[in-house]
Length: 314
Length: 314
Image (cartoon, rainbow over all chains, first blue to last red):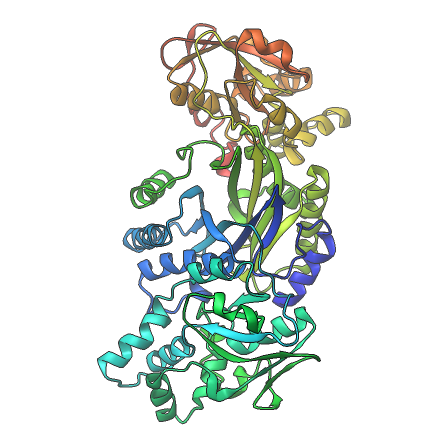
């Protein structure tokens, strides 16, 4: 069964949802004058984890990918839970590395662990859960015509790093370090997410690539999004490495996954309220779809660009 | 690696815990004048699920086992999350049965689903997470000398049902129905748990058998627990079936797992505040350990009684 079929099958039977409809980065329920947001994301070693990641990086990432979803809701992370599926013949040192990585991430993000569970399983499986609190949840559905479209940090390094690793490309150490930092040890934008609550009109984190996230934002907000390729924050080292591989840096920036940057829309008069670095990459308009430099942006174009290097085919 | 070794390994690296130390049915953090409790429990089909369970029963149980932990904390369940690991060749009808079971349980317990995640994995794995709220969390560590030791409902039917199934025992339909109700479709004691908050001094749910849970309560509260075998709420059909197998009904009652009844301690003057059915089975005293009819109760005695029928060896 395909993932979308499984999701449809469950949605059919799960009619009772939270105080926000399913479909955002995290679920939410109202508790008095605050909102509790909650998200979970399971990592299966065999299918989700490139061999190059150390166990510490795997543990850190399980926390980061869930914290990022809470950050995209404009919430402060307040608790972490996890369940482990562990094969009988697991390497103790690998497992301890994962424990260290989770521990370091919880210190980095300043979150307590609330509950843990361990089980025997064929695969090494880690399900991470993060809870957060916010006065005003940020959804994917609030973008309004006239809003600016913005992104934190830079994009493309995660995929450029993956390409360098998979294709065995020789690059100067300084460049490899820059790419691998984002490919192997991405961080969630917690401070930025909290600052966006009450200011941004919509937000989403980059899990599956900027292109796909923009399409989701446009669809869920019922708007058209127009972006300008020249404005995309793509670092010079990404552009150089990608061009050397005869690929287009803009496409790599648009389809690079697990960046954990935040994409958000904000009314232009509120932009000056934001006290962190970000880049304006476009504008929200009336209509539907996503356009780049005036032409439609393919949603899942990645497969056709570099068929054997996508995040789905690890 | 053994489960206890894995847990020790993680505890070593996870120093930052919630507002209650780890070791209770669920973790907890204080939010203003209320407490958020959170628990997770992963179910691996191959190792945790007897073949006799229908997929609906499996789905229902994933919710129940987590709701029960929240109930044992005296909290009202407010949200459910789950992650699925799904083999590529999964039977769609089986998966739909699980979805139906989860859906029915969420309606039964009146809980919304907040978030879900699905992944490819070798095993069918379901990680369930339940969040709850309470003004006053019930822990395992508050039992005081002089308190009464009580249990909701009855004990032993789950294990008696398992024995009947595994040994192919012929029993009248009425009796099979009574045993299988608890073996296949146990329910969590939500109303009772909420009523115990602020009244009981300590509580725990029966996951691994009354004996083990009493030992945990005694250890975490720093007290001795004395119970009387004649007071244990063991139904006549359990006693009859178990005696026919040349086993001791009291031992079956003490070691029957996944009952999801609540064991609690309560000051005798507060007993009249409890408006639900329960049985007083003993008393809290100064000292350590658990005693039955004046002699020490073995903690993990089950393995020696019926070696091939324990819940660990499904």
